[in-house]
Image (cartoon, rainbow, N blue to C red):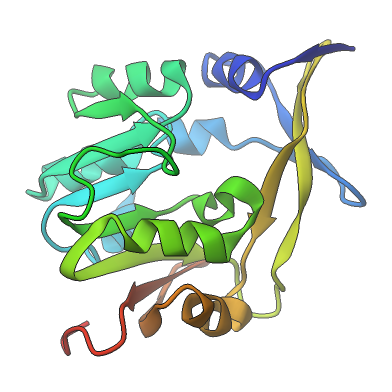
Length: 216
């Protein structure tokens, strides 16, 4: 099997190559590119409904939720580290840029909402570090809307890789975060859970800095 970069294997997946995520000690999981590539459904729109004001979609992929944000009247920007994802998002007619959330981001310190959906709370393998970083993207009174795993699913941190026919990405850090561990994780990042929401079989929460706002 040929070693390749994460971006190469992920870009190939976005263009239709069947791809799985492999984590140590777990069964391979099919990368749900079909979900990311379709139009937003009513659960996606409910998730977008938790966002207020100008919103940055962190790890936007092919732009499903960035498009839904724009359709709901938000100023929205998608960011992703993969060129192919940014191109597909732009093809939907929404703004998107190639950017790592841990680097300088457009509008830093002025966004009203930062959206972490589709498991993107796992970016970098350290949800506390990611939430702390995302907090600094927000202006006063801002919020983080984060999708998490169901109750009973514990936080897990480790290495993962993507595998497709004949190719495997070099390992990258990734994490999963369940609802049960969210309050502790948010607190460690300087945030408070303002509300949790069940969206079909999905779970999301609104986070903010302590003392910010009262209507969530």
